Length: 200
Ligand SMILES: C[S@@+](CC[C@H](N)C(=O)[O-])C[C@H]1O[C@@H](n2cnc3c(N)ncnc32)[C@H](O)[C@@H]1O
Image (cartoon, rainbow, N blue to C red; front, top):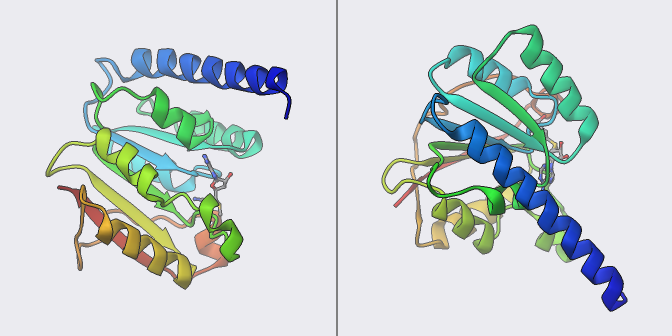
């Protein structure tokens, strides 16, 4: 890739992150609730719409890369008149880079993330040491919970291994899944395993 092309891509990324930062600082400030729930890869928004309706005292944000899914999620939010719920089309990495620790996360949900089954694609999995570092930096010690659910056994083992090895997160074996709601992928893939961890 030429230097010029690389510069254009980096500038566009920096501009997206700056815009996300402005949006987050405005939307997360009071009167938004201080219990902040983030769903990464929210798809069509089934889980978070139901969660936000059941928890009007929480502020909920769902993020997904795909515009069409986010448009459908926003329709669900609007039809249900949920003032405590937002959906954003963004890359989770860019969103987290824009997020300030002044507004720490209370709960993080990752439901049926893309499993990237081929070994050469494992680097694309969301759960990586660097990603766990970033989430830890936006979390509250002893409080923030990370909830991970997958239908893919090998990805579950991978996630468990990486979270267990990470110094900022402690796996809570046997902790109950806090809220159940079918999603597009949970309907298709009813078998799943769950992992819940708390910020040390
Ligand atoms: C397999 S789908 C699961 C969707 C939903 N959680 C469900 O259970 O139906 C994974 C979703 O993660 C989204 N995704 C993947 N990588 C992402 C990223 N870096 N940032 C935001 N969303 C991402 C995809 O666009 C897709 O909608």
